[in-house]
Length: 310
Image (cartoon, rainbow, N blue to C red; front, side, top):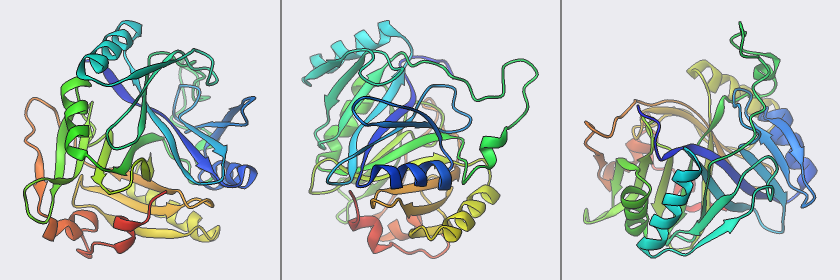
């Protein structure tokens, strides 16, 4: 697939209630690599196989949740064009200067009708994955530290005005709709899964009355066995598990949902099919079958999935 426009999820900044407790969790249990701390008190992490400096940033606050979610774009010219396109669509944008986040270039920030802050950026310092670029090993020690996900894969966000959010992502940012769940009356979308690549999704949204809510950030595992190992590590560390291990009907991915010490849900995810925008008709799930879409073996629409967000 040609590299153009928006490339992939870049970083999430998440609020936690106790910084050092959360550092221990994300470093020692989830197995992320700490890459820096800044004067604002933020702690930066990346997954072991990510090359860029950071993909997950936490800061201490009075309430848990998401500050913003960002996508990396191809280059500076693309950043300028997308900034202009967003403004032409009617969205107000803000320029965040290079260096405001460690090792990160200038960012374009805008608010979605769902109340979520999104960012686009073109530059982030590459720090590598520790394996080198000449005759590299397939993995290093960091993969076996904690759960050890490969990368930040996607986020599911809850808020109002999902139909308008879909228009912004598809008409301005170049995403395409991969799957959807209909509302009970079948007239609108209750949830949407969007891709800017040939991944089954890079971001998803669900209709919810309150603005700006985080359902989960998802971390990619390489195999089903690695997802099961993640479940073992969660149990060993008394991590509160929400759903799984199981398979989704939506996306066909395999999953465990669990909560960090502050109540932010995260996902260990693998699998899914590979759609392409030129030959993929969106898959549709009726609301009465949403349980199978969420938890295919049990065909169960877990109450927490619809109601617990930060």
